[in-house]
Image (cartoon, rainbow, N blue to C red; front, side, top):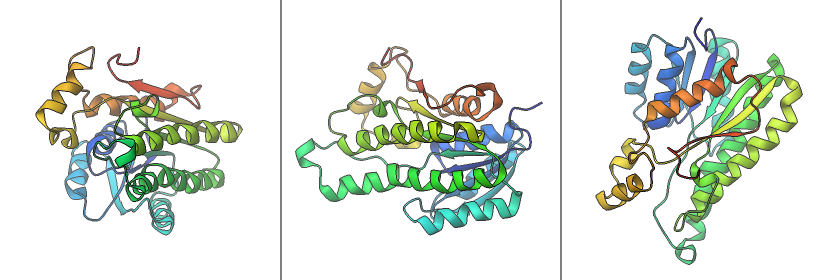
Length: 248
């Protein structure tokens, strides 16, 4: 039997990068997949890829900085499939490298609004649905930056540390309600975002990896499948690091 057979999997930021790879992996494991992303995202190509993987898939528009948008996306998911079993809170944005003193208050708040407050609000309404139906699984996309500092990335580091904090609190609060909450902490992954990085920066990322390469999106997706499925039935409130040994 496939690991996510007959499970409804809701993925924010599912139209590209790690979200898209996770959507494809979930479809291969038998899930009904909901790609939740901005209307101006490349969601049509993502839908085609998930369908090619054999999955039933639905696109719902989502702006994680808007509570009403989140509530509507989850309501549409439940209306279509009857329930919500797994949520991957993956939507997030990066920032340029700025010293602490050069980081504007506006930029700092913008990063937190998407990467941290957005995850909190998604979790709030995902958990509300879980309470109605008797349980579920949440996987939050943090980062290696959620576990250590990174000069020049104060807002991003703060947001990803915060995601781990939310993960631990919710895991403890809802453990007796048939809910598990965990997080993924990947190092730099070879996605379109990284491909646009200057060659010098990209080479630096590779040199810092003990394996001397960037991670692949499908490697993170496989880790997501583990945390989303019953394979991790006693894993709760923790983070799975995917970094080739950078912080070991």
